[in-house]
Image (cartoon, rainbow, N blue to C red; front, top):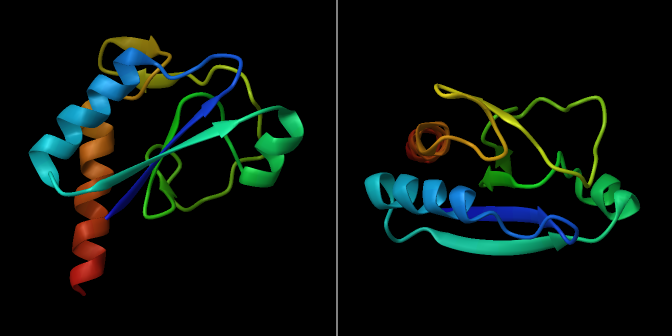
Length: 108
């Protein structure tokens, strides 16, 4: 399982996003490999198909968008709809669900 934590140079790595990622990994796949990727500017965001900081992908699949492509890419802060309202990081359950979906897909 390859998990990519993408963040923009301007916003840095979010402590709360890293905490959510850690919780999701601990509950689903403690051996998962996490790769940190920094995105430098809007051109780099477009090249890397970066949806905003932070973005987390599991085996290349975005935890929120799945495999569908968004209309645009950006290097600024990304917001997620969580049970507590809009937050600048994803909920651990969203990440865990994507990990579980990718595990099930790999077993087919």
